[in-house]
Figure 1: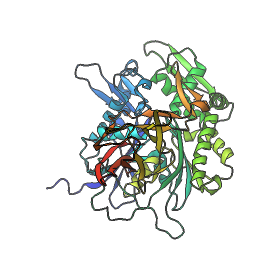
Figure 2 (figure 1 turned 135 degrees about the horizontal axis):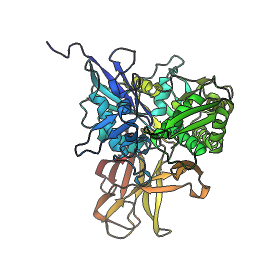
Figure 3 (figure 1 turned 90 degrees about the horizontal axis):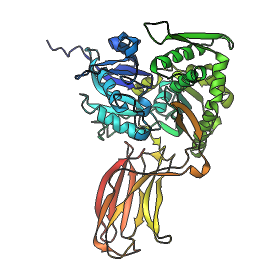
Figure 4 (figure 1 turned 180 degrees about the vertical axis):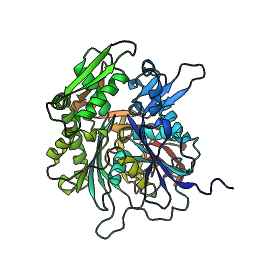
Length: 532
């Protein structure tokens, strides 16, 4: 008998989180979404602690998620226990902690593949959709491609987390939503407009293969997209709140995952709306199972809220909100145009954060879908086909020779906040900088013009740092080999010879077409790299 006859074919969604990874499945032609039970690695159905443990054996063994709790307490520590790794995927290498036996990318890939191996035998995955943070979307996207390249699945898609959250909140077509996602390692704000409403058709999703090919048989469809009008993010989240609690209560203690997990338990209890402001709660942790060496973490809700204020959390939230709303206004959407505010992520359970949003946004209705699975639910809703016409979080610039100043300068191509995919190419005319020039080098860079704050680590504790206006503009040259355009015949100094056409495709890849205007012939047409 054919064992595949009774298999459910459908889409798998994985929302890799800093503290919790959520896994859900949706069968074809059904609207129901199921959180998957993956045996010993999940805490509850669909919720897996984002933990990886590696032994020191010559042939190492690995444990994942909830299964790590079977280990003796003294083994559940770094460097063998790797946690909080998602925040560092795509981050600059010089900022990534080096106190683990695996890199963040290795840990994330191992967890995804472990999830894949533990999928129930009665389902067959036709499509895989994963979520990605806003701040490191380009680098994260490349990592996802590499990590999933060996998985036996026909189609792979990537959606950004705030957009998926808006759709996961079941908002009707035509809605303009502000999404606030307070995760374990990042805080993202995004103003999203859903297509539809007023008698128009609801959004249709467009699934994009990560290798750059469109869906088979779907290219003839007319797509409507969910548009991100404005967004901003900060590399700070719930795990940092745990660090602040520990540092506040025990300034000199060496922080580890056991202590941070205990601080997280205290934080979750303090987030219960039934707890009074002055009621002191206690979480006790044993530092050594063979002795009575233990410590007590004691805190009231009011002390916790004051700690968040002292660390500058609400000041940072105000800056993120200001930047997001400013970008939205540039697209014709003001605060009064919003139909609601969607609050998701584990940090959304903290009452003072909800109160802050209500105070900032006044009468706007706060929409609170299930905070943990909202993103994965939205990701599944996107896979039948929402084409996200997103906006760039970074700008891109081209280096050129300025004859007046006699030096190389940077010319902006695409600016932060510009929508993509582009609807028409950006055209530039360029000329040689010297007589009889035989080639022209095209060098690109990221251009960030509005990064107002960043999170730095002082003795391992996250600290919010505001940036001076004079340091706002930042040029970061791409690390790829510059594109060399051969000139045949050689070019004349100061005389236009090439037309460059730059576009951004549906995978946020920067493409270029080079035309020699002297002969009206196309020289080059290629994908240069990911732009966002």
